[in-house]
Length: 221
Image (cartoon, rainbow, N blue to C red):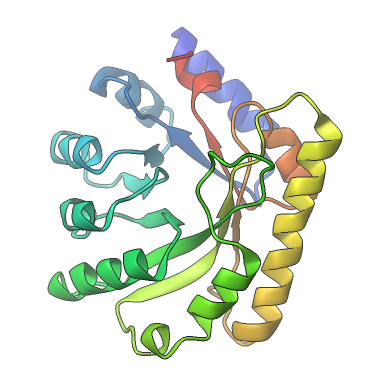
């Protein structure tokens, strides 16, 4: 068994059944992805639309591709025909672009709202107030080709575990509030995508339903 396969099996065993693993394959070659694919993994995450498109064209079509990086509105067209889940919706403009491209492809695309919970200005994401504004808007109400299925966040890059826990806990509070306000009778609003290689065990403790792990599987970039 290769190092990548060994790493994957170790990570997989550490994650409860209720939490989905997205293997972050950005910048990694096709052969590395296929090693993890042959272990049974089907959910992979990429951060650039054109790299994601290239990998979609070359790799098996039963892979569920997740767009986890910052997405520009003019790049949505590249991934709209096939993307499984877009984690990084951080504006009404982007959501509108996704809806438009999904309509062209006769699809409904699942999306997560990316929330800004980190104590870092470099992280993208919505404030709670901005998310409420989007979900309460007439523009969103008229969108028929996107479906908001939950929230995503990135914690501060720090060794302070208390701070990371506090930030993940904030995301769960946002989730509960938005669920109660906008999705009370909608079971598809169920995802909390939080936790990466450095902090996924803590994210799972706090209630993550989806973790995004790359370097612990494929090695550092």
